[in-house]
Structures are given as structure tokens and as C-alpha cells.
Image (cartoon, rainbow, N blue to C red; front, side, top):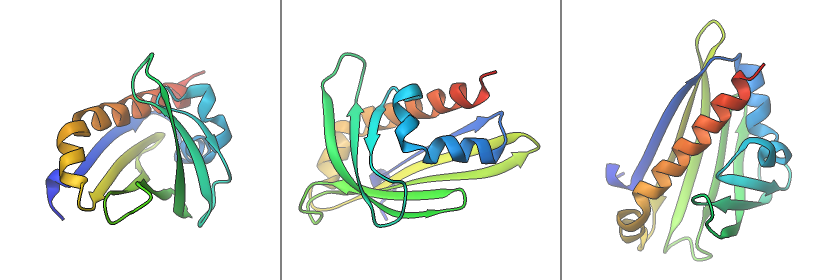
Length: 147
């Protein structure tokens, strides 16, 4: 895969992996902590179509998109979204958690983009997508480290 068609972010969270995983997979709870994916409707299980409400930046209009959850397994969740014609544009999005040391969880969040329009879309919007992944990561960190 062309590396320019993949966006990767990472953050260390000072919280046990099970608590971070619980927060990440509690889709109903996103509206309480997530400034980017402000609401998700649906069940967190493989082969489910969920409805994702995203806000690309503060004050921006909300986008509402159907997303297919491809897999949910311990500490890994994968979903797919894009245009109705996935041959034009598809995003394969991964969340992976790992134990880095006692009480520290690393979140790797990445998305691989394919399709005939992928290069143009990522050239135009890749920096904003990466910034939104960063907002997501930072908010998850703050939420999971609270007490």
C-alpha cells in the first residue's frame, strides 16, 4: 500500500488496558468525551452497521455516515466507511490497544484509504483527518486518565 494513503496516530494513556478498551467500545458513551465522533448509534459488534456523527472542527457542521464494523476482538476494533461506491473511496479504520508497561496503554489508530478517488481526497483532506485522529486520541487520554 502506498504510505501516503495511510494515516497513523498513536498516544500513550496512563490507564489500564481494560478500562481504555471499555471506553473505546462503549459507542453510546462517545458523546460524553469525544469532540470528533460526537455520537455513534448502534452496537459494537462485527458486521453491524453503525451511524457515526462526526464534527471535523469546533463549530463545523455535523456529518452523519453509515459505518460497517468489520471486527471487534480483544483490544482491536476495525471499521470501514467511505462512499457508497467503495471502489471510488473506502477507509479501513483500525484501533489497536497494547500494554506498554504497568498501567500504561498505547492506542494506535490508523486508517488505510483505497479507491480511485483516494489520492485526491487524502491530498485535500489528509492533514485535517490526521488532526481529528489526534483530537480523538487526546480526548480518550483525558477521559481515561480522569479521577
